[in-house]
Image (tube, rainbow, N blue to C red; front, side, top):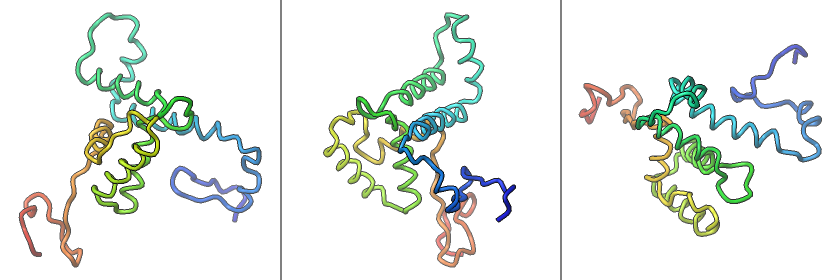
Length: 171
């Protein structure tokens, strides 16, 4: 491989064996922890882009925040609170986002996800804010603008049952 090639780790490119040999031999994961925190804050800023200006000038005015601003500040607060006392790697929000990502990538059913959340809640009672159902997790994630609509496709993948075809049952 060319030595001047830039690896795009954030776009899914893996690292080569050469990169792995020189990486983090002392086991210090503090940069990973900071990256995790920065990622969730970036998601919040992306979901509420017009709140950036408000965040920077919040000390100058004494106005009550509107509903959207309250939601933004609630998410920021939730992103700063660890999932349990002493945890530095995950906030409740970042942990739920990661779990939902795993659910989507592996095509878990909503019921299997709820069962996993119940098990995690039972095994780790110190994670008090962890939701106990898929519905609860989806509600939290939807506040970040990560909600979705399921669109069915025909078995041959020749059409989507969407918009004017949403009621169709065959292609």
